[in-house]
Length: 280
Image 1 (tube, rainbow, N blue to C red):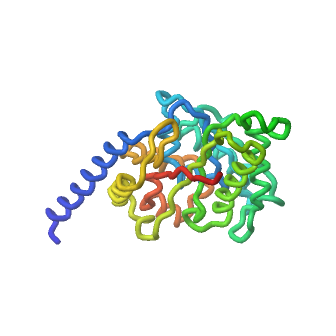
Image 2: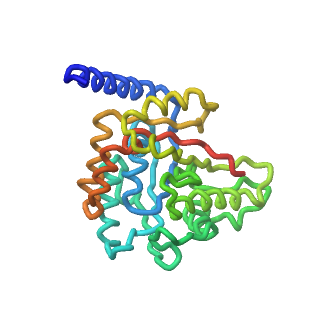
Image 3: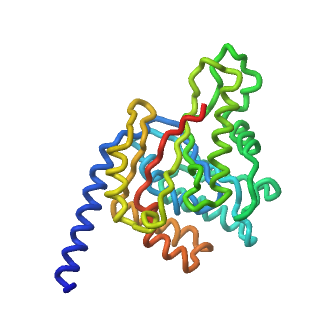
């Protein structure tokens, strides 16, 4: 392949990426919602959810986004450093205040581990404590109370299969079932959106996966309204660079060699597609 042909292919890839970025902006999104991004470790928000966080935090959408992280990522004794890094990253990605970042520190119940299975009921109890503290005292004849409209988290494959990630899906689903257990006939006040896991080729296709994702979302069954599905976000060059800076500038303690590869070729730095789950 000669030099000119390589430049033409590169130009075509960039044109397709920018076209899909433009197309994604026409997809329906969330407006005026109270949103919790539920993550397992500091840096999940940047490595996996950066496009969605940047998009949903845009002032004109009127959303309030809070990040709830269920561990400080203290496996290597860097918990305090990583909490500070998470707050810096969140502000860089558009979260309004560091007060909108909450980190749960309970290494006995939620260890930062590739092998530990987090208890789904404990996760649900934390969500209840923060977002439905008056649930037990609310009669079944009333709507279930919640100070939240939507949860964003991993799907049941957790992108990488990490057990801490997959536990968040099951814990969130358990929370919604608990929320509605005594309130049959009422509509659930909280919607659950999950980040789509993809195969390994797509996962490491960077901007090349934007076209695949857009086409998939076009053909996927869509619902509009206040809580549309799917939620699709494709970041342009500025958004991708900001996501990368959230890792290299904020999460410095985590920048080992393999994470340099991740921020360079992972599609999750470029595109997020989230599905609204029906669990109740």
